[in-house]
Image: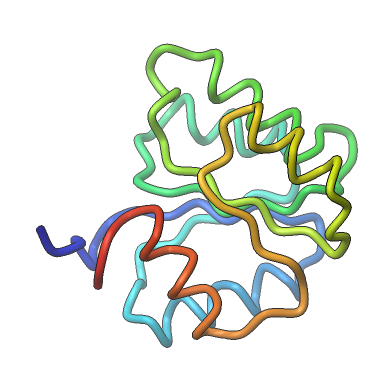
Length: 128
């Protein structure tokens, strides 16, 4: 089954520059239906109001981290199946293990490029 290129993606990062970079990478890959949130709480609000096909979130944010956001999504019946990719600048093993236990679908360590993003997305949502 081919991936719907019109699927809705939510990107979450507290750095506007990173949001812009991820949005541009997604555009290069053919995805234009992208919403943004600047922290976990704002993302949760958007997720409760609209269905997303994929969430790409930074780990380190205030006041709600990407890890807390992931746990919230996984504990909510309506959203628990939403594919979730975590982005972080640190590749600490304990973080990867914690994210896996919390139900993350994949993990990207910064810096990354369109090819890396595509590989990680393909493993989560299928070929596109």
